[in-house]
Figure 1 (cartoon, rainbow, N blue to C red):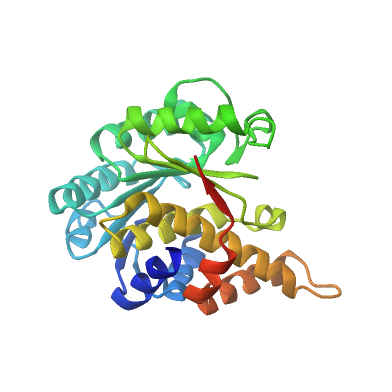
Figure 2: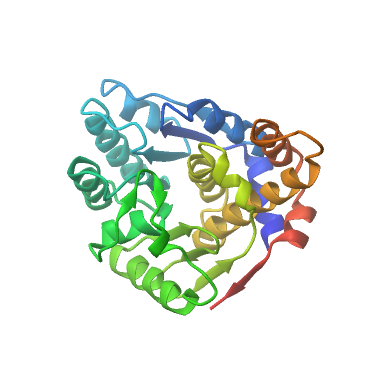
Length: 273
């Protein structure tokens, strides 16, 4: 299943407009190129909607939020909705400040995202179900483990159903749901947490998968999660001697660029509930 989804990305070369985190913008652009898509980043309110009109998908990332970006994101989201293009909302740090939480909720209402990609603390903040954001990382109390998996999967399922989105919640075990089914994904490596921006990269990768597979949004979002997680495993397997997180960051990008559909099909580690 996932082999075809990745091949569609590599064949269709979707153009993804990303209003994204300034800290990670370069890695987001490069991961799109590595997977076979193309990036464009335009966050001025005067052109954001027009740029979106010429693209195949849109990512809205709150990582380096400011008042200038909010109208740009809203305008771009509306234009993507008008054209039927997929929108991915990455509510970075939702719950950490009123501005972030209120902006994320407004984008969820008015931007009508196809998918919301965040950690459990951020998704709980959007669901107004408690929990706390620790910077841009998930609070320890929100981490999904084998012991909490049943409860977490049901929460994500309910959030996706209420919000009308694909919910892609990443952590030690990743959960992706359309409100009916839940993909429980066990790909990835803890070292991914030592590289700034792997979540941002996953959000733009999700947008590329959604654009290339418009008839299978749940599977596309799950495929993106499996793909980056598997690449995290492959990157770690290459480390030798004194190599650390800096080298790992490069190896991760290499793994995305060299990932084959067959590798993804064989290496995807998931169950559907």
